[in-house]
Length: 311
Image 1 (cartoon, one colour):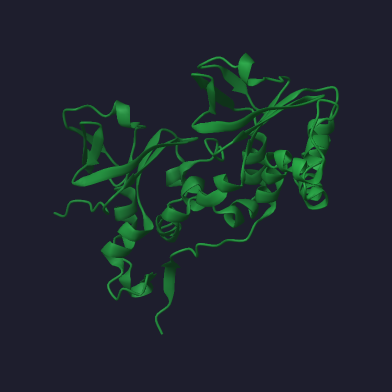
Image 2 (cartoon, helix red, strand yellow):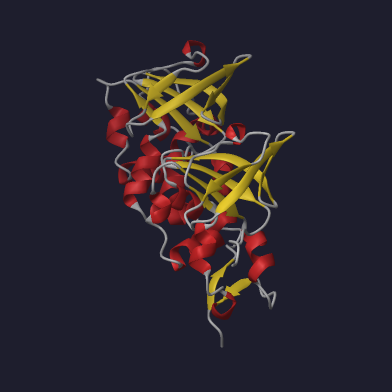
């Protein structure tokens, strides 16, 4: 029987440590259901403990080494806490298997030394997170965003800080390789990167990665239509194909000019980039999901696999 290199992820994944940790913060509002209403007399950690699932959630914070930090009365915190629905596009199991990445993602949601209510946030304001990276805040008609995540419930105030619930998990501090691993719709491309031993190459600085989605890769390579890429379906020049999806400069959608430009790829050949009526194309492929910011550049989902030119 032919072994399978990769397969589509199942739609249901188990809740893991990250999910519990961030949900512990993000569900403080539901504590009202059990009669425990968070008040300004409680620390941020106390607010978490007043949620419905107090024991499990408090234990999760302990495991993530955040409970003590959030209980510190000598420091103030602003926490941007993703809600349950924010995890739909995240492979939580993949994230929790890497303790360093888990810590990095968790601490990127916490701003120490500040207790910023929504009324104190200004448009374009940047703040330094516990992870050491900057977070950009936006205000539009009293609506607040942290990077691209919208605040859905603001101003849950405690004695040592304030919690804002947001509708997205902030992943801008992970690199292109890890972001593809954490994004279920890009899991096959992530596996192909690893199979071709190019993870180090895609961790270089200042890259644009055009990442085909799972269905796009299956349409191109899954000849027997079993929703898997079998070993005998992997192209012999897989490494060259993967590298041809990576441009050696970071181009966000607005950076791409309306006149066509050729740019070098890691494979050595060039691709042609163009923006027309707000749509970016790379060769004959169209960008279908743009500007996924990562630590070392940017990702764009594309609607077809890119093949390097043949001699």
